Length: 345
Image (cartoon, rainbow, N blue to C red):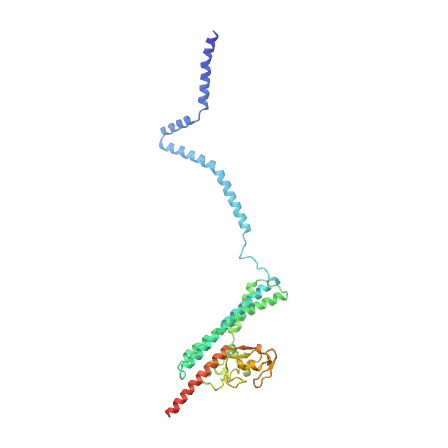
């Protein structure tokens, strides 16, 4: 009997476990039933159901995207706060620490000016060559164009000098303890003032006392007038309004005859050197012999000069050496022409 009782209870246990297993299965069957129901629904109804499912999925993803967008907005706000407003950022006033920089920039302008003016001999040499090539002033127009180029060349040098002087003025202000704000405006205003001052001068005021322009005109004059002194530059530069206040003595530059003979040997200069003290020139070998011992100052041997100098004060003068050769070439050509005329006569 006990065995029969036990056999009747076992099927109940199995049924209970079977029902539990059915309840705990995944909802795949439910999903399949939903799909089956969806298929029985009209097409428009099925579309609405799918849209609702997608919308529910988007609603779950939206909170995460909102957090990321908020973080990006915060980062952009921080960048805006750290960004410098360049247009409204005030200039930092200069101090003594900046003196070295300003002086260095000024020296750079001076160096560019020297390097530019070192090339002016080329214009002078071309002018002399053109004057020699022309006969009876046939190339006057070309020489006039070259004269214009020379004056423009000098104007460029004056502009560079204006930059340097403007920086020197700012340098002096800082050295005196003055506060210099708005550096760019200060520099631009000072430069513009100097450029306008130069542009407002007459041609005589710009060039008549410029040694480079005087030498340029002399190189042309000496071709056709080797033994005559060049007239004052006032004869080459027309008078303008504003020249009346200038004294005649200030404008009387020129009129000197170039002497290509050495004061010691009284013969044409050979390897000429020029004294930095009195600017008289000598043949190299002759002045070396005159200045023995080398370190002892000697009185200048040129007539009428009372200055003294040492041998180290005499520097090679390449520009003068070119002039001597050109003078000798022209003299030789003139002698040949004179001999030819005598033969014809």
